[in-house]
Image 1 (spheres, helix red, strand yellow):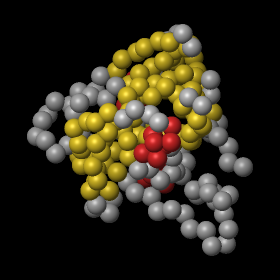
Image 2 (image 1 turned 180 degrees about the vertical axis):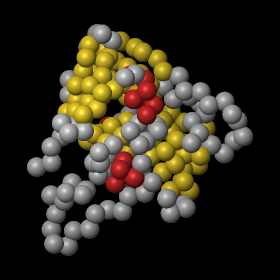
Image 3 (image 1 turned 30 degrees about the vertical axis):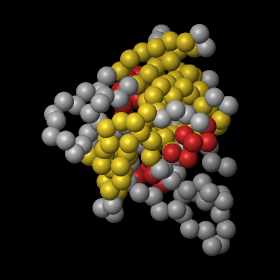
Length: 197
């Protein structure tokens, strides 16, 4: 297995080239609203991070695009219904994202949003036109939900960025042990990074 990208390695292996995405609001509005809302379920506590209508200056880090875990990221596995997905908790990405292929595979319901220009690091511009609202995920026996922007990601299926991290409040990260601790409701939760084998 390649230590950089996690794919099967052979002597001819080349890591896929990642792209950095940045969402740029093309309107002149200064009304940047990000609201967070908490919801509960009979299966456990859910924290829902809602994206405001005007999501300007959203960024997706190179770590998230390439799928490479760096000190500012935590790579985990999650369950969306009966489907296992790779997830990156990325302190360098401003918003939450989901791979368009995973949305199709799982059959998640997409919602059209006001299109945003997505600027790729090489100068190319893409449009982000969809979001999946309140995607319920189980991560190491912790139930969460988040709104996820739909993009063609290379490295990971889901990226949880600062919108979700801010919605849960204080996060204690131990980069030596590669764990993160936070509270949902009154319960302390701990996630541990997957070890590469």
